[in-house]
Length: 155
Ligand code: RTP
Image 1 (cartoon, rainbow, N blue to C red):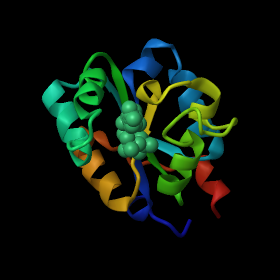
Image 2: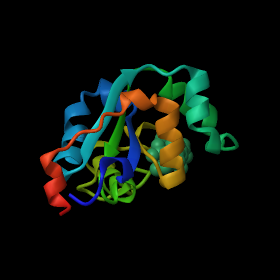
Image 3: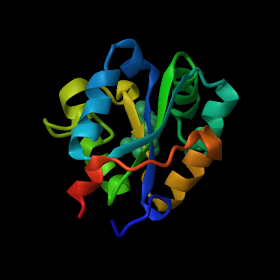
């Protein structure tokens, strides 16, 4: 194995309260898992409004910011870190377009969501965001290093 876990790309993925409350955790986790990505951190939390605002700070000028932060803090969120080659970009591909009316069938939002304000999942949109979001949601000791057979998919 050439790539060491410490160097492997990681992304932050969260199932929003609508996805958790609709019982879609296993369906969504399964799609990342079967693809061959590795789950290195996971927890369920109800974020405070302040925390939600920190998570979405890039969107604070948008008209939907307040409603979005209210919604994220309205119930349980499944916060995860997934690891693997290309996981940031490909994770977004698994998730599909922001607006479920535009996401393709076969994607998580395309198959399971209908409106943009209830699009069930979040994924980091680039390497910097991924790093910031992982640091915001997780302490370093909550990230687990281990070898999985999934690494056979990459080498
Ligand atoms: P996310 O960050 O949640 O993965 O979504 P994204 O990158 O695909 O979309 P972004 O533009 O960053 O928007 C973040 C979340 O805000 C909600 N949204 N509502 N017009 C609207 O009402 C509207 N536009 C965006 C969505 O929940 C989106 O995921």
